[in-house]
Image 1: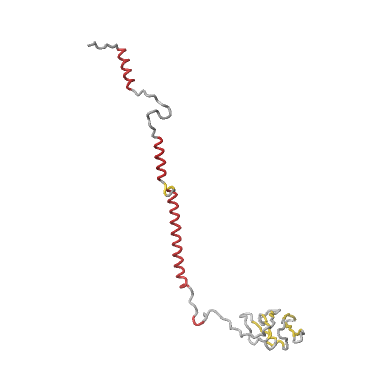
Image 2: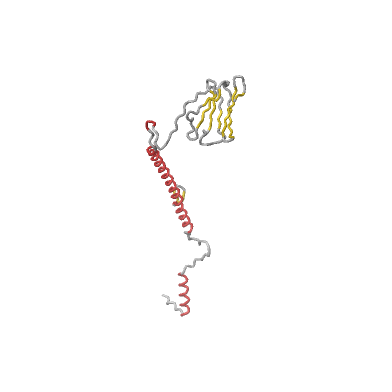
Length: 210
């Protein structure tokens, strides 16, 4: 057997230092990039984040957009249904709100119905004329109406200013002997406190008569 190695204190310190550094990781350090033999987890994290984002969509839309569109569709649908229901209810209740018809042809007492004027029988091809008096007053009718009867006479009807119907006993015979179908013209003027009316027509000979 050999004798044990005897080291000086300096040699002992140097040996201890070598053993210390031998136990440390002497692999090279890299400022940027991934050293050989190591696997980076950054790419895996990005893939997981992208997958998570894709999982947050519904029907190809983001969660917020999807639920907003869904809420709008629901509101429109409810509004349409409510409008249809209200329209049906109003249509059903509408006829009930109509005033009841007047039975037996009676008229409410708060309204007045003018008397129906008697029928006017005129010549088939009669000329007609309408005259408003030149001077209006309560004593004068609102207007005068002229026509030719089947017998050839020129008739004047006076209409009052309230009901616009023929005044009582107002039909006057203006002239006879007029040609059948004669044109009729009428005029009025006010002079010396009096209102004058004048009617023009043709006789059977074609003469202008008044």
